[in-house]
Image 1: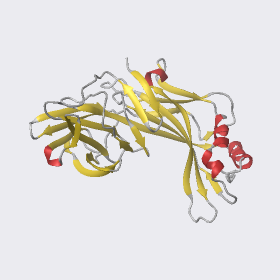
Image 2: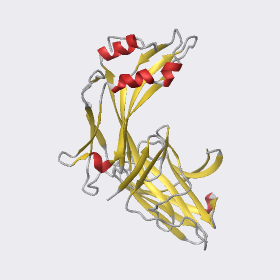
Image 3: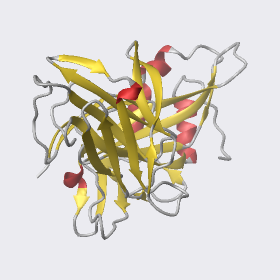
Image 4: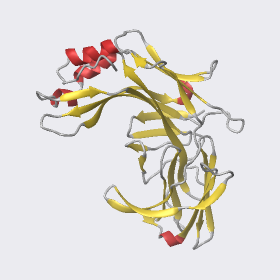
Length: 323
């Protein structure tokens, strides 16, 4: 049974599955290190491939490897094997080499990474299945009410497939985003901002209703106003004359694949990949090939809540009864 160690929202998630520990460094040649987290929602999927020897890490030259990626891509009638493109990007202040593809991936599909080391003809491979289609069950309706002290639920479910009876989720994180537009005194353009509300995170199995095949987490709606009152940004950046306009409230579900054990999230679509793994699902190498996805549902804050936000807090929110 998978053991979920910890989740630090939007920074690091550590998940241990049916994998084995390994010695990162090879003392009789090179060890290929692979880190990739596949994202169906991403415009570009990046692959970090490096090598280690005698406790030192090096980058391959692009000509050292033949790197291919196989699976079913969007708008293509059948599976294909493509050669990955290459790019150098600044990561943590260093220029690092990445392989990438802009082909769109599909939910609930198995993809294979195939790396040929030209110097010794060793083939390094790994497979991972993307997470299935996921949809929200609750909240329902257009509006969301934060005045209640009664515990509410966020619920979601996944579309199963005969070849993949599970939804391939190792862990979930649910975050609420109070979105608003801001116009500071003297400014000519509005700025998009948000207040974040963590509603829950944990191992996928612990959130599942096995009878009705959905997942859920619980929250108390009125907690929203406590968070609003204590929000550091609003308390420290609300000068006289500031104007703010409410946007729809977002419930966002972060879904992390079963193989995933160490993952950093920056701005939803960009990954910072750690250099020293503890577990591996790479054949003839070490590292990680896994997947993640995000799903959102948006709801208009109901009228009495909007009025309270505008009238009870000195943040410059403008009440619009017609939303």
